[in-house]
Image (cartoon, rainbow, N blue to C red; front, side, top):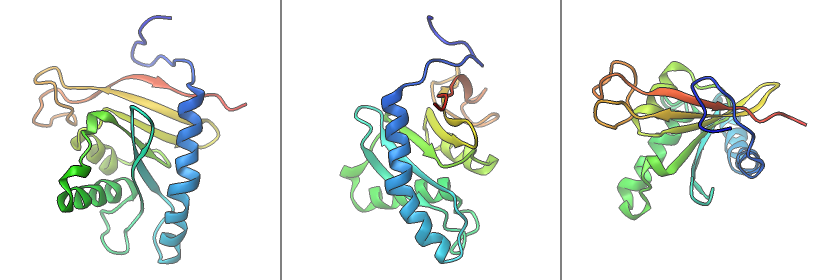
Length: 165
């Protein structure tokens, strides 16, 4: 099939899909259940290493402590707090797939991009999972939101949507 162009969908990767769903079920949902019992919303997120799909960090919505702590922002915030305490736990965002349990809002999409992630998987109602590949800005190679300091900003270049059986 060759390289995907913007808007094209590629074939699903069954190993990746199974692992992403496993992380949602085993890592994010238990955190989310506890968060909901404290009055938070149901959204969560996780970061996985691209190399072996191992879990880097998982988190859930924390809006009762800070209204900006949507699931994705909470995940990024908690991860960097852990890295500040132990720098050996740092993983380059370019080596991570960021997983959201839903379609990220504008705030969260910007946070994911500003944090340097170039791949974001998200769960979609009635359609399974989708994986978004983000190209770095052409100006200096960094990923940045439109209008950000990296110039022209991140661009979605391929979109893979596994089909449910």
